[in-house]
Length: 136
Image (tube, rainbow, N blue to C red; front, top):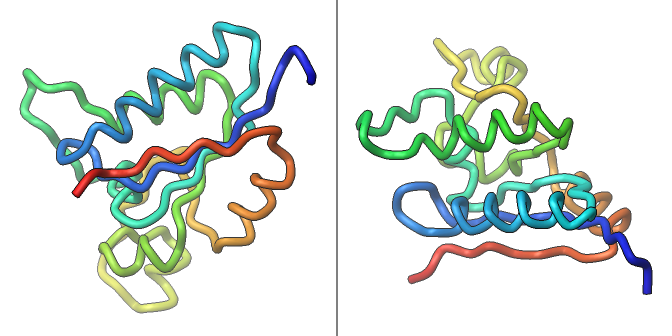
């Protein structure tokens, strides 16, 4: 067993309605501190809300979308939102805005929108895949 592991994180719970993004961020920080690697983060289902550039929590609450974006940039970790989940929930990048002739886009940088192939690739490259689901 290797001393250092590479993880792919899958977040399916939405920020502010589940603990999934918060727990995943704490896990990611702890993993890096312990010398492990986060290969990529994949958002699926309601987890794609984490990549919205329009989320704006009250000033006395933690801005989980910004916290995640800052963390991803600082550690140069790629993060992908499932395209099907994103489109169903109104999360659009410039490419999809043009394709569907929509008036605006709202994908927060550095998140990207892609298909399940990104998740499969992450699963192949990682030693472990850890899921953070929303409860219900």
